[in-house]
Amino acid sequence: MHIGIAGIGLVGRVLALNLLQQGHTLTLFDEDSAYGNNAAGMTAAGMLAVFAELETAESAIFEHGKRSISLWPALLEQLDISDAYQLEGSMITAHPQDFSELDHFIETLQAKVEEASTIQLLDKAGIIALEPDLEQHSKAFYIPHEGQVDAQRFMKHSSDYLLAHPDVIWHQETKVESITQGSIHYKKSVENFDWVFDARGLGASEQVENLRGVRGEVFWLDAPEVNITRPTRMLHPRYKIYIVPRPNHRYIIGATEIESEDKSPMSVRSSLELLSAVYSVHTGFAEARIVNMVTNCRPTLKDNLPNIEQENKMTRINGLYRHGYLLAPAIVEQALNEGIYK
Ligand SMILES: Cc1cc2nc3c(=O)[nH]c(=O)nc-3n(C[C@H](O)[C@H](O)[C@H](O)COP(=O)(O)OP(=O)(O)OC[C@H]3O[C@@H](n4cnc5c(N)ncnc54)[C@H](O)[C@@H]3O)c2cc1C
Image (cartoon, rainbow, N blue to C red; front, side):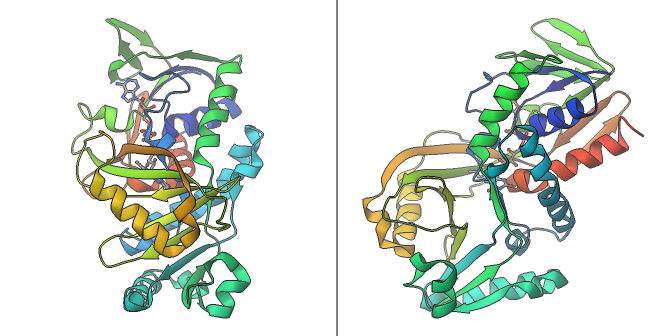
């Protein structure tokens, strides 16, 4: 089939990679350039936190999350970046005055899914054995089967791959005005396809009911004195932060969660909260260098769950909220199976 995809952020790319594997030819549309920064998929920390996200999410995301974790390696292999995937577990800790938060967090996960019984309580010695740099902490939980995709590498390498692919035409900096069954409307013209996908995230709000943005802010820090190797969360009564390690002592520190579609630069309040919290996890962050401060919005539906909408010759996928990396491969698989291959 000749297939059109509007929105080449995270979902658009996962769709494109799957559809090319299945032998289709693609025309891609994005209002951004192929290496631009607009997509939430470019801002994301890329955590595959299938258990930890259950604290606030429906257990429905758990099954999709597990499926995505099993699908990511083949997608990354297609791009020749298998090392952009890590599944070595994650750490959750807190300061002693907040240990009750920590216990409550884990109890919530264990009440939602049976598999959460695999989460291990660690004392100081257990923490040092897994993450020696977290030695100042006396209690933590280790969650096996969690990990991360290096989101920024995925975005860059998928751009390279799709731009070079002989079966792909990519209309960059082309704003799609609307999508109807089998047709993509842009710049006062219309192109017709055997099937079209709307993967515009927050950009689809005129055509997707109850879609809203949830603002998130992250820092990129270069911290040569820190050697944390797994995604690590610190719980706190007011703010929860995560530290996601990238190669060469780079860490993504995030993320705020604010009910707003404002994509303006990070506020002083958010920066103070994120940086003081990260310094309290490891004092080596004091001498870190701030290499980037990024703000974006998570495309979110009323129930905070993803949605697939199927019509004749058209599929819309949206609402991946804070779980895009955790859910996209499984949601795309489901959309293809129940849509174009029905
Ligand atoms: C701060 C932050 C941290 C996050 N961390 C994580 C995490 O650790 N783990 C996780 O699983 N998820 C995380 N996410 C969530 C994840 O990034 C999103 O769920 C995911 O990116 C949504 O994918 P999408 O393709 O629907 O939207 P996007 O990735 O935003 O892509 C939408 C694309 O559509 C294009 N577009 C929009 N309108 C138009 C138009 N009219 N015409 C043409 N093109 C258009 C945009 O330019 C963009 O390229 C995070 C998000 C944020 C903001």
